[in-house]
Length: 100
Picture 1 (spheres, rainbow, N blue to C red):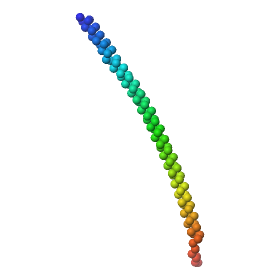
Picture 2: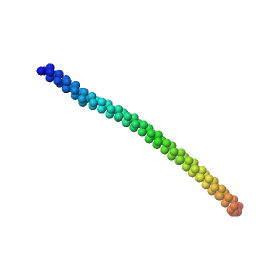
Picture 3: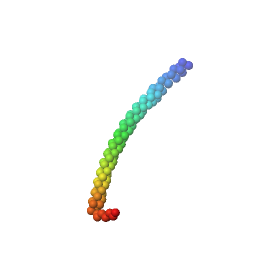
Picture 4: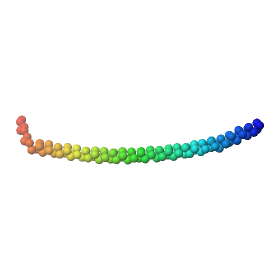
């Protein structure tokens, strides 16, 4: 009877392993594979986002550089124009007589 009970216990344990534990382990393996795939996709998404942001930043930097150069050019032109006007005005205005 004791041997039969032990055999029954071993049989039930094997059945439990086959019916419950193995499928659970398989499901866990599938879940782990899916998790690895999600992690890889997340890394790819992060790289894409960083690349995209870098491109946007690069475009903005270029736009800022162009605007800065344009502004500098405009300021130089205005200064030259003002200097020219002041010089012409000074040349055309009568000079006060110098008294000694």
